[in-house]
Length: 134
Length: 134
DNA sequence: ATTAATCCTATAACATTAGTAGGATAAAAA
DNA sequence: TTTTTATCCTACTAATGTTATAGGATTAAT
Image (cartoon, rainbow over all chains, first blue to last red; front, side):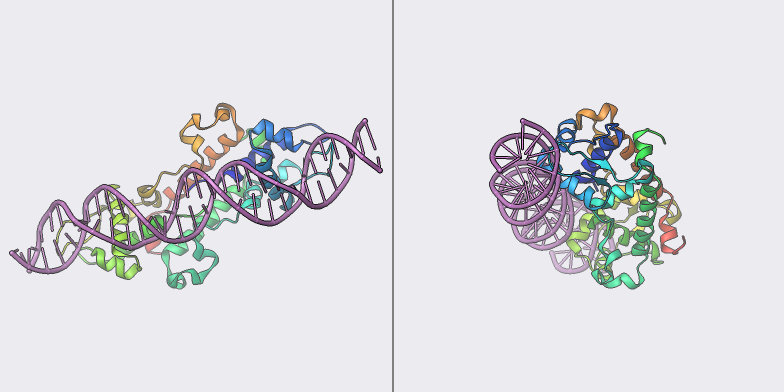
């Protein structure tokens, strides 16, 4: 089980934007250069973060990205779910995925585990990561 | 991010073995039938559990599987790692995977998250799942 | 000996991921 | 208003990983 590259790059992108103290925001091409991500690939990552409402920008020449709200108010769960839902097993979202869903100790456990995982991501803010605070 | 089928089937297999009160243990073919897993695929799942030392059996006709130790002493982390290591991101195990490993707030976070995840799996026993206790 | 069962390796179909390509659109700057 | 710089969006492909299945070797009870 691996964290996929969009989530990894997405976190790094958010860290870079949060770390910048430039009032004009951070240009996509600078993020691409600093983070060693191709401009094209970064395109889709930034799009996801934007659709989730975590970053904003204007368009055209000279624009740049900023956080939509304070880094203290952005959790890792926000960033993670910008790219994918947390499922772990399909029968959590869709009982019909498996016959035994109605009465399955395994499924009950995965649901519990999912909740624990979400809580873990929810309890960490972007600000804590940028400031390297536990 | 999904839990793969071997881990899912592996947990169900362990639940079935733990739930059985047959002194002779549970036959592989019965697990296959009850859990709707092909005998051949179950082969590899049982092999992993056995190599990890979670279950034992004798060989040949009439044999069956039992837990190697009490269900109270088997954690979900034991079962999970019978099938794969918990990595999340490659730079955790191998710093050379990425140039910025030496000083990367993102990597620091993934390491912390991994620890939290492992702790979560460690704090749940097979016995708790079988008895459906929180 | 026969039979029922596990042990083990190889391989194939399928799904997902990671990343690229090509261009459309928007707006600042000249 | 033309140019330039930058984002927006869709489609595609190569590589990788997952989910099995196939075929047979080995083991030991009957």
